[in-house]
Length: 157
Picture 1 (cartoon, rainbow, N blue to C red):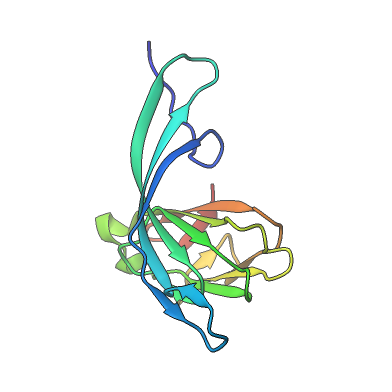
Picture 2 (cartoon, rainbow, N blue to C red):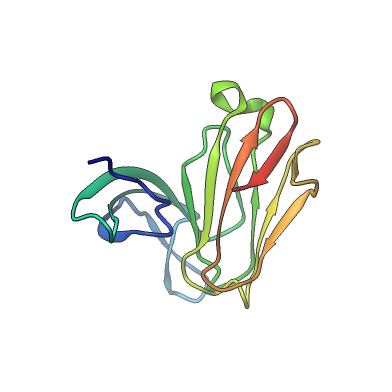
């Protein structure tokens, strides 16, 4: 029987999350996560129509402040806008590995983007479907961007 794997955002049950986190103390004396925490997350995807499980490891980066995504991006960026709005800067498509190919998922995992938005900015002449930016301002919203090599174009997948 062939098992279908769906987007980790649509059908997933979080089984384990191993956080390699560093923390710091902010000006109010509260402990906060570091600007970015690399997270190795293991998700078990369960298709309700099948009584089988499939698992895959996803590279997840936790983002709590403005952040420039490197040219070797993680697969998932979990953004926490609890304290303030956050801007993510996408890498230039021409600098991405594998000939400019990448798929990046950005998620408001705390549900606060309706109060503190997430702005995704392109670099150089790259665009997100013709625009230099994309705004996430709905709580718990998740988008997936796919880089199209040689045309400097990110599409919403």
